Amino acid sequence: MSNKPARVRFAPSPTGYLHLGGARTALYDYLLAKQTGGTFILRIEDTDQKRYVPEAEENFKNALRWMGLTTDEGPDVGGPHAPYRQSKRKAIYREHAERLIENDHAFYCFCSPERLSKVREEQLANHETPHYDGKCRQLDPAEAAQRVANGESHVIRFKVPHEGTTTAHDFLRGDITVENKVLDDIVLIKSDGLAVYHLAAMVDDHLMGITHVIRGSEWLPTFPLHKRIYDAFGWEEPVWVHPSVFLKPDGKGKLSKRDIQKARESGYPVFIEDMVEMGYLPEAVNNWIALIGWSYDDKTEFFTMDDLIEKFSLEKLNPAPAAINFSKLDHFNGIHIRNLEVEDFAQRIKPYFEKAGYTVNDAILPKVAAAIQERTKKLTEVGDMAGFFFKDEVELAVDRIVNKKMNAEQAAEAAQRIVQLFNAVPEINADTSEQPLRNLAKELGLKAGHIFGLLREALTGQKVSPPLFDIIDILGKEKTIARLEKAAKMMSEA
Ligand code: GLU
Image (cartoon, rainbow, N blue to C red; front, top):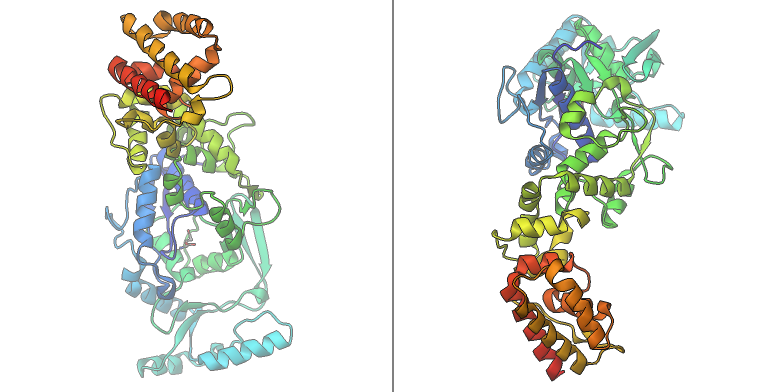
């Protein structure tokens, strides 16, 4: 494929939020644009008023921003082909539809919805696939134009020949040939004057100079019609790319809307906003979705955005259905978290601490980040893992300290002895304190594990935490000793 600057567009309909499938398309668009020094365009396909969701557009924009997919042209940034919102391009579509009528590739249709549904019922009863029966194809064009001029309600339909075949070429799937008789005289302009996707997207793709159309494979059935529309205008086609469909995580069957809802209810991220909510990094999400249906070679798995821009290629997209593997996402998240600079990681986790109700102390945040970066798999874990750093006091669970091997009195004594030990060293760290703590355990007839467990509980109020001496280093001597004293007091009163 040539490396000419590509002009690609992501063209969502604002009927819902950005989900994995759409996000993958947008990512592929972006990668192709960046790789070729081309242009990434956002176009809002809002011609379907019935399914319009007002917050959807904002959701797309936020999601694209979060993924790092900056648009070069679009409703907010503008560009040479504005407007980039289809509802503002009504006149353009009308004019193009009329052009098709003039060259006999389209016709006005005055059939009432009642008549159409009757035809449909009859066809279904005859086991036929419902299709337009062609009534208004026969009308005299001048007479039809007069009826339109008189204000009669009408639609504009595409005129498909009944004989012959149409061959559309998909970059990944090769030639797709269908008999023209199975193609319908689809509506291009509805009775409310709005264009449907089939016309609006083709016209815009042409006028906006789109070189590659990457879009969901749900458009494959109407793809031959789209090719015919291009031909009817006499336009040069873009490269058409319909990437793989998503399969259920077990690989059995297409991922349906219901499966998606089910996955979401079981805690899997489906929309980009879920990803943020559930603590995934955009780097991980991009890496993960890039690989659903694309691979670079049979071994490389880790890709930064720069890697993807450099290595992505349409040639290596695999059109075979691809299963969604959510555990892979967790895996990538861990890897990308570890790949961040500590400072960067610190900034990423800050909002998650805040969301969990902690007031973050910026002075110690980088150290906290360093202590937990290795073991963090999702950013949402940080509150439970390290929120104790930002508490004034931790709540101790006496029963986690006191057990068969160590009663409350012994625990109180041990805590006091640790305080003495820590007070005696210039700085508390593994070098100065680990061996003395072990000796102390022996002296008190306890296991080292008891002493370290007691310490961990007293300092963090939790069983699992970052390494002990990291905690002490971050808390500082004063807080460490205060927390131990509080524990000693609690044990002696228990
Ligand atoms: N608006 C269409 C959709 O959301 C876009 C398809 C395309 O990219 O051509 O499915």
